[in-house]
Every structure is written in structure tokens, then in C-alpha cells.
Length: 241
Image (cartoon, rainbow, N blue to C red; front, side):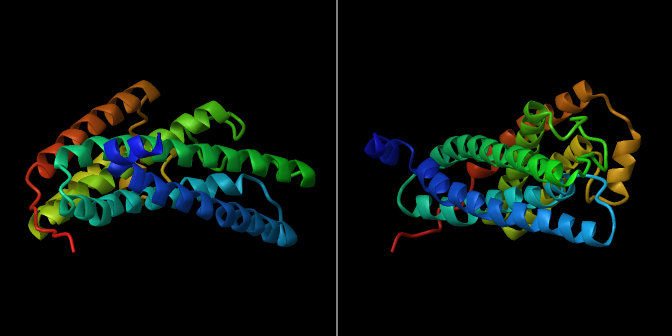
């Protein structure tokens, strides 16, 4: 079975075996440090909301964006050098983006669950400091779905920009605002976390969840089209040693 995966899914195998353990490894200090910060706050004051929610709505998305870039800067170059096709990279890369985003979302949902246990021990309220697509910190199915879509969108944005720069610096600069446009609506998933001015303007639009999901879905479809359009013309400049 492993031989079949190696031969038929080389891009997926390489990216999954490097990215998934890396995400899992970072999850432990992420949870420990975040809860430790809550503990320090409790020593000098009162813990009034979920620390995991504050951290999870800001930091992990940038990791997923970076891993999207990494899929291009490392994996695409290596596979082109060894005779793999652009079609293989795009197809398997998108499958990996979905799986990796889901894996990261499961870990984030688990972080909320771990925090719930810790907060219960000390009698702290696990309230949300900002509105999100989930109303409470224990609505785990919605938490999972929200972060899955959020992480997938940021990974795809990273792929778009990474492919742009892989093709040429000029196209790379052009894809930066495109990647931003793809990812920006996701700030509404968690009530604007980390996008000053622009994020606040989006929140003021007060879009319904249905419209927001439709907008995000449309942008993802557009992004996949852009990814394929760029990937078809990336230069075959990498050479195997």
C-alpha cells in the first residue's frame, strides 16, 4: 500500500509526511504557552474569556499560509526536477491542502476542549471575546468546520502567491493582492482578528453566514482556477542533481 502511495501520490506523500508532523509538533507549545499566559493573567487579575480563542483566531492561519508557500518553494521545484507534471502537483497539492487544513482544524478544536477542562478546574469562564461563526467555545462541530474552511482558504492563498513568485517576481507581486482578496473574507469567520481598518470595514457589512460562505466558496473556486492557470506556465528550470 505504501509503495502505491509513493508511486501514484508522490506530491501528497512528501507534503503530508513533512507538514502534518510539523503542525502536530507546534500544537503542543501553542496550547501550553497560551494556557500559561492565561495563568499569568489570573495571578494579577481575572480571566474573563478564552485565551485559546484569542490565539487560534490569529496565529495558526499564518502558519497555514506559510505552508502553502512551502508547497511551492520546496515541493514543486523538487518534483519538476524529477520529471513530475504540473498537473500532478496541482491535483495532489489541493488534496493535501484540504487534508492538512482539516488536520489543523481538528487540533484547534481539541485545544478548545483542553482549555475547557483547565478553565473548569479553576472556575474561569470560557467566553468568546469576539463574535464568531460559533457562539460558544464548546460548539466543537462548528468550531471544526469554521477553522477547516479558514485554514483551507489561507493555504490556498499561500499557493496562489507562491506560484506567482515561482513563475516570476512580477507575477508574484501581482498575486499578493489576489491572495489577500481570497483570504480577507475569512476575518468575518471570527469577527475580525488581526486586520485593522479593512477588517473592521468588512465586519460593518454584517454579512449573513450563508452569503459569507457563498462568497468564500466562490473565491476558492476562483483561486483554484488561478492556481491551475499559473501552474500550467511555470518554468521547468529546476534540475535534478
